[in-house]
Image 1: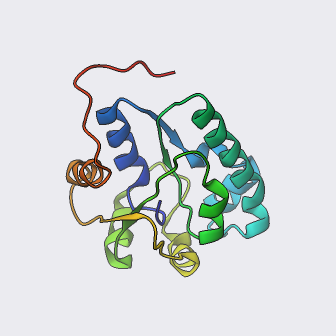
Image 2: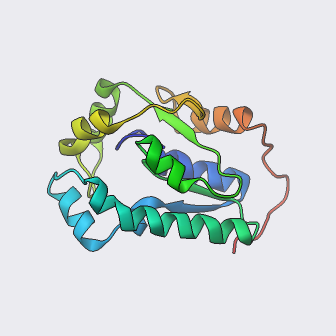
Image 3: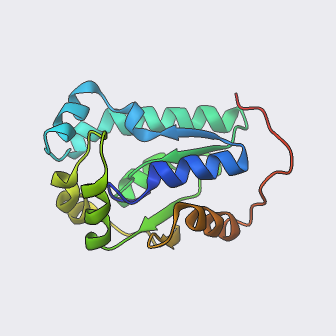
Amino acid sequence: MGVVGSGKTTVGRLLAERLRWRFADADDFHTASNIEKIRHGIALNDQDRAPWLQALHSAIEHWSADNRNVVLACSALKERYRSELRAGTVKFVYLKGSRELILSRLRSRHGHFASESILDSQFADLEEPDDAITVIVDNSPEAIADEIIAKLNLDEPAYSVPHK
């Protein structure tokens, strides 16, 4: 979890690959109208996020019921959002970075519908979690993934686990 540009997708994909878990991006659960708002630099409000959070919660419950390990890249900026996403054995990892670092990353990123125009609103909405593993994102994605694996006390599998 973290603000736009904190590395959720990049680190999440790498983490899922190393652990041989499924990767999911919460952006894929947004409605088309939400994506258009974000694309135009319009911050989402709680009403916009309600169906998105419900869809994510349902997906998490489904993965949990099927005993599937999934890395979900999701902003989850507010505590009430994280409360709604808690199901099964969900653990939150907070990718924390300064506004300056994340702004520089956003300015070099291309092809994503979210841009630096929503960064300030994301930092304004951010309620830093007390119960998450916090990782500072001023390192390479590989080093960040290593730190997450260590902090979660996970070992990278020595064999391939099929994805469902």
